[in-house]
Length: 291
Image 1 (cartoon, rainbow, N blue to C red):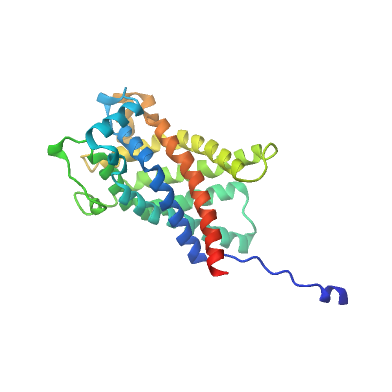
Image 2: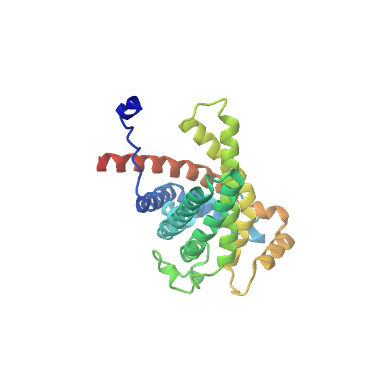
């Protein structure tokens, strides 16, 4: 007993305060979207092509953007994208952490299926509070493809206040967020588990797992994403998700639901990696500054 008393106490590892997790999480998302915004804009433009442009490739769409709007056209809607990360990203992180901490304190560490459900709930919550920025982002990125007489010329995030119901398409946005969070969490964990025997636990493993998860998430979520985009950009505000889905399949074909697959994957894969890289670096910076 005396020997146990003489043992030096091992200091508990430092933890980042909960409020800083919100700040760092949101900041990481904003930094990541700043780099992948061109791919996101390209994806949105392809989803809005309609029957007349269903045979256009993402390279052709990209050339059309450069021709009509210049290179800076790829960053149209960046302010709304940043606002979306500040709301959706932060809300999702906060909600998931709150549920995880409650479950751990009352019922123990959650199992894998429970984490998936928690991720879906957190994604739905984050998407709901992030819908105004999401709608503004869709409208701003879509505005550039319109003829001059029909453009609304949105500036910064004032698209939230002009011609827009800020909760437009909230149901579609939440549906997509639930699919994305469920697919991303499940596939990332499974890919990481399968690759771990062949790779050491470090950045290469995380990057490879994220790219696999990104592709699976893209395939699973793109139909919901396209419906969401069409609902939010529809002229008739009473247009519902099922109505848009039937219209797309009937008029443009079933495979149109995966229009913009490569640009979407080009965003989701690197976006996942960048968020975790920035998150880790910001965590280290916090400990360095506060030490």
